[in-house]
Length: 135
Image (cartoon, rainbow, N blue to C red; front, side, top):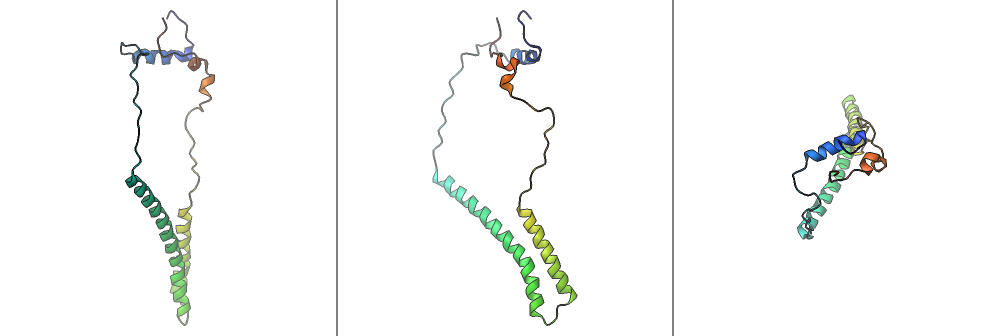
């Protein structure tokens, strides 16, 4: 090469040369502005989606409450609480706890593979890199 590029930038320049199609990169077609009109139907869909999420949480909370309340009601309405009703009540508490535990999000323990990217604007090769090939 007649010009000098920093070694890490050589692959960027070679990739750029591979993407050249023979035309001037500075003469580009203008990108038309995109306008999205607001629609009432989309507002209704959004409100319906929010209502469905809220109703699903209410349903799950009611289901967890029924898992505990129904065995408790059976135990208190009978003359003597036998072993089956006590087990039903204890497993109802366990199931309700599992249902309530599943409602709360847990933090994601994802560790990104590979090296950590630093501030790219401080790199010499990206700061001095141009979109047109050097003369």
